[in-house]
Length: 80
Image 1 (cartoon, one colour):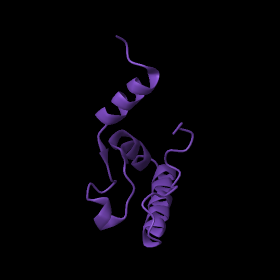
Image 2 (cartoon, rainbow, N blue to C red):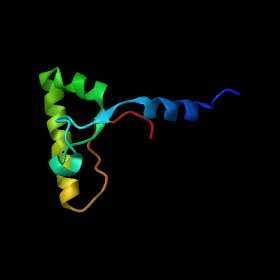
Image 3 (cartoon, helix red, strand yellow):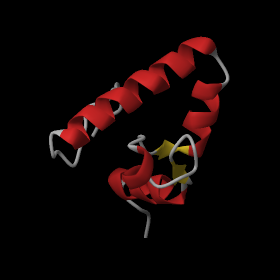
Image 4 (cartoon, one colour):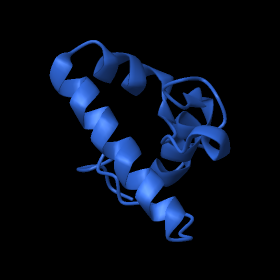
């Protein structure tokens, strides 16, 4: 039996290696979690590093306000 589109997406999502840019726990650093490939791509350019820094800033601000999730913009354009 073939998997539905949503099931395939979830399977792909779980196979990705998710981490923070520093590799440390987000609770210690306040950094965003993202797929390792995305972080590597962002770190490779100046524009990407700025985007990553802005996302971390938004994540830290939301955490400081007591929020669990932050709208940091790294996943913009992706259907959620």
